[in-house]
Amino acid sequence: MREQSLAFIMSGRRQRRRRWILVTSLLAALACLLCCAMLLLGSTIYPVQDVIRALSGEQLKGVSFAVNTIRLPRMLAGLLAGFAFGIAGHTFQTMLRNPLANPNVIGITSGSSAAAVFCITVLQTSGAVVSAASVIAGLATVILIYVLSRGRSFSIGRLILVGIGIQAMLDAAISYLLLVSAEQDIPAALRWLTGSLNGSQMHELPPLVITVIIFAPVVIVLGKHLSILELGEQSASSLGVNTDRTRIALIVSSVFMIAIATATTGPIAFVSFLAGPIAKRLVGIGFSNVIPAALVGVNLVLASDLIGQFAFEYRYPVGIITGLLGAPYLIFLLIRMNRKGEL
Image (cartoon, rainbow, N blue to C red):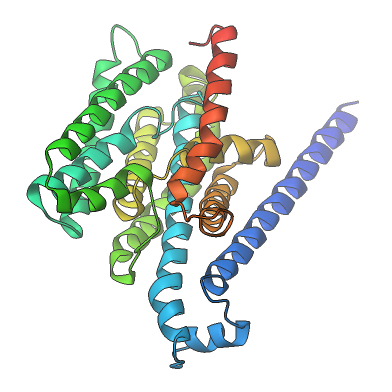
């Protein structure tokens, strides 16, 4: 009887592993196809061989400029930002055991965006200064939300409500900065409100590349502990997880990725909100969904950017398309959680 039970458990584990590998592979393949589409498609569709020659360094009239200067930076920005938003959103949702607990809803991206808009419109700076201000503001927003939500005991629901309030305050500050800023600064500042890959340049990407390379492996390695944290504080501690140290490492890593991604592309709406639930629905439970969530984030950003460029008469920034996808789901989730008494 014991051997039969063990065999049944191992069989279920193998099935879940096969499903994880299959889904993750398909998500990675889809991301590769979308990356290729980003390089091939545009106002002019170039042959595959010309694109490959341009990427290899050969100078082709028209092709080299379009591919290396416009399309490649745009594709890389979408790839890296989608990865960062997806992995960070899943981390917050799992760690806090609530699908609303993601950087978009609880105000972290608004904190980074407010700092960026302040630097652009008031200090009139760009580049490294904006990135540094975004990181600092994102961390400060996390600390402020945590402190205000403490009370006598820590409450996830209170944290989310405080975060929503902080987000509303920061959005009002952004609106005020836009209202009083010089007219020539408004177009650059609006980029932070919509989220866009337009105008992405190669020299803007190194901070995002370095951040993803450093912090994404931290979250991936701690992915098994992330799943244990979902069981609750006492259960995680009883299983040998240092909850405080693990939570701090996950929060710092996620905030840095969110802040730098926001500084690079603007706060692309709802990617961090949608990536985790979609990955969980596709992969199921039993294994860490950190990598699938990151790949879902990549696919959402790249697919939405292609839709915004080619599906309509006018071209729309990627943040508008992801906002159209995420807003109905947010309303549905709020209604469902309210009926269950989780709010």
